[in-house]
Image 1 (cartoon, rainbow, N blue to C red):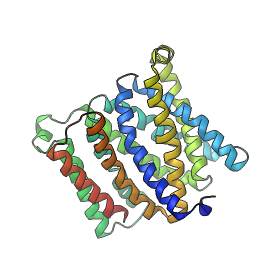
Image 2: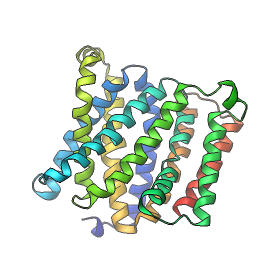
Image 3: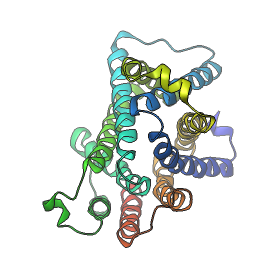
Length: 295
């Protein structure tokens, strides 16, 4: 059980989960050049679903039953957090740098805070409002590359809009997840939403040439799929939720700050992407905003 894990291991797992999530932008960027978005997403979550189902069976001794009232929420979780998010994710990474995508997506906690205030009546403190302003300013700085005139001259392309679709999808997933969490543990909710998402992706993956793309995939391609499924999905989520159970969502949420920093550093080191002044400023603003929002 998470409560028996030594505290230092909890912090280590949270840090590693954040690093793994930062690495998903690198694998996602490279995988987007090899596979179509729906095929990449389907393979990622098919593999992740198999492992998550095994972990759920081991933890509970069985697969918890899904009541009729829970079926629609779980399908919606799969539709938003798996299907839509990953189609936007891989499609966007075909068009823009992984580092810029990571900083835009880093606004997930900020959008969730706004959604929680609108739909659940959670208070927006002065500190949270300041954090939201900083994070949004950072994202805008990255999107327009430090030149606000690009908002008026068409300098913002489809890649940025697709990555912002990730933010909206994940916000929807997180807010709807509250209902599912009332009847399922986080592990079960993540597992069933992953299975639902993979099933929803299957028809489009088949239409996109799933068989031919799988047959033509190299060992490197399968390595990226395995990383996204096992490290970016299974271990990332399981360790993050273990942290929430042990030290609370507020302190665990602070580790999200590591994700954009890791993604930017890895993008520069492994992909050769440039570190521009607008990217660095956006990273600093978003990181500060995340700290204030999740503090």
